[in-house]
Length: 300
Length: 340
Image (cartoon, rainbow over all chains, first blue to last red; front, side, top):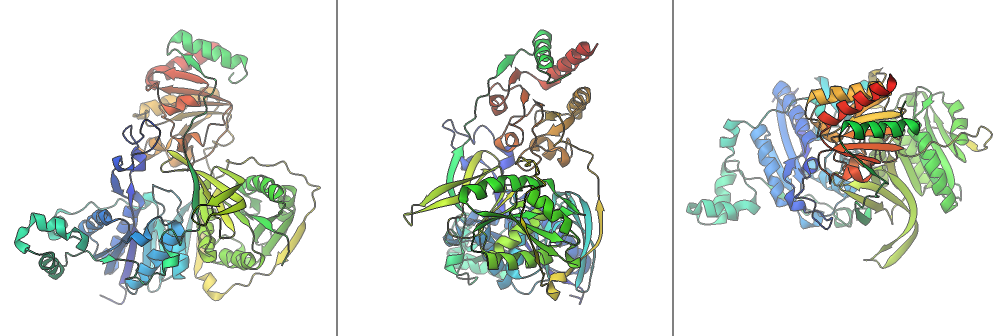
């Protein structure tokens, strides 16, 4: 590593693919079958990872990826390894469950600090399951560092200063900020590199300690989980799991207890029926509709 | 510290002009403050913006907290957060509403995190009501109901923050109605001396280019919108033709934007623009709540969809079951004949 290299941490999330809600997901009684939704790598988090990888490609340094989620979120971490991340960490614990953005950002802050010294923290602008865009700025606040939201490109990274182009609803802005800082990345920032075939082979065995039992069934020659764990660990294939106690998180600040927002009620969407007219998709049907709209001064 | 409890609205201004969403929020916040018998306060930060304070009062505020300082000229997270946090910690507002603009969505979570309070993004309605926490077996009266579509817009959630203050929420532009200004309205303008620290200036704005928006969905009397059912660029050309014929703009659902058929400036819905045109044509839009939240107040809605059970039909005034590629030309033709 040169003196100009940078240590980046990327925060990613596995999300239900809410953009592709199909008929299987909504049940007849109006409830939702969440398991019918595929779990995916949150799209803008892929752009965040790509931005961090580009920094490392250009300047050297490391890219560490942290995700908080259920044990199966290890899938997105493997994806990150295939795309070029140096190190991945799964933050998982029942105590983290039902966290709102405040409790989530506190847990992520604890994990970032535990992961070691860093220069840059990257995350996607927002996750498609909530669209809140709150976790990035909240993690920055908890880390006590500046934030650069809606980053589209890094124009310069030199010494302890970064120059970034941001995209805003009113236009664009070019800002310079001291390191360390947190950057939230938008979808238009870059095209994420695909997982590499070579890395897929390199990390073929990558697994968390929670997945050892399943792996052991595939490779009985290791005999015990401990034997398999040792094998993976020696080959840099063991994805570490951090629980609340591992990151020194205060119990009252995580999960449900640490979440000030509460859901008062959820309404499945009951649509108000407008007084509606069926219009035949024919020349006559349409002409009659237009006639009516003209009479009511809606068109014309 | 004032003894009265208060509802706050962050007044966003850009180059001396108050953002529409801030004025819209003042209208809603006035209703909330009246229901709770609270004072309504506008928080205005900037440089040489004193003359805007009266506009804030004219739109319903009882008090304006005015922080005027050269370092506040352009919005930056840390200086703005410093000023607002200082005020919020000493005055303890009950409710704090912020427009869900780029800047508002940058600022609100920073404030909520520092105050360790709850924040709900992109609310489509705000009401006052009570909430019973079943675990504590305790009822909280007069809470802010923060209502928003959730889970990709397939549900509507009502969120409350029973124990932490302020109760914070962001709301998109166009969701609330802008109140009429009353220039004679009286209020208190309180000037605040910002106490910035060196660390607050870690970020410098080198340049800023404001692009004039070429899409004016919000003020358009007619919107012709396409969705996931428009799978070809040709379909959008037809939507443009119809929009031109009707003197309107082209809108889109998230599906169409995600598919790259049209830019996100055209997106209508909870995460896009909220519109109330005289006529809304929804072509090939299934009508997820996320979209309907942004258009269901339109005066007349024509929905075109091949699926007779598409949810969009339930808010439509005119229901046309058919392929947009066939129906749109019929509408265009019929309008042209009418114009002759």
